[in-house]
Image (cartoon, rainbow, N blue to C red):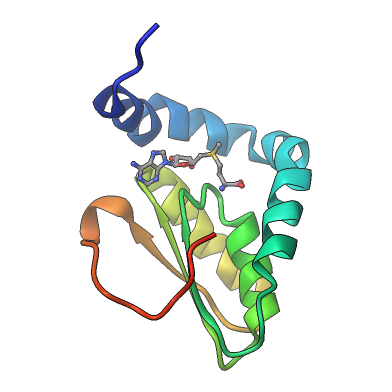
Length: 118
Ligand SMILES: C[S@@+](CC[C@H](N)C(=O)[O-])C[C@H]1O[C@@H](n2cnc3c(N)ncnc32)[C@H](O)[C@@H]1O
């Protein structure tokens, strides 16, 4: 079975993103060990800048913001507008230290930077 990138993008930008949002607590709990393992592997330090691509409802983005502290920065990017809106609302209520910024994927273009990939 072949799955095209375009069909995945369409899925997540629409129905897939909406479904993830509707059950986000369940899904987040299910994949939490993966997120924890990636964050641990990244060995983030205070003041670092990072980007969370495919940030979903923002749970890992907020954890990353806590890891890099108020002088670091975190950008969460996702293709689902519904999820990005949920992230912004969540960041307001949870008030994470670094205050992550959330963008929809289509509003960003790749550029040079000094961050590290995870
Ligand atoms: C399995 S979910 C994981 C969400 C999040 N990382 C977490 O741990 O809760 C995958 C996420 O990737 C996003 N995604 C899929 N394709 C993408 C693309 N091309 N650009 C940006 N985000 C994308 C989806 O909208 C979805 O929120």
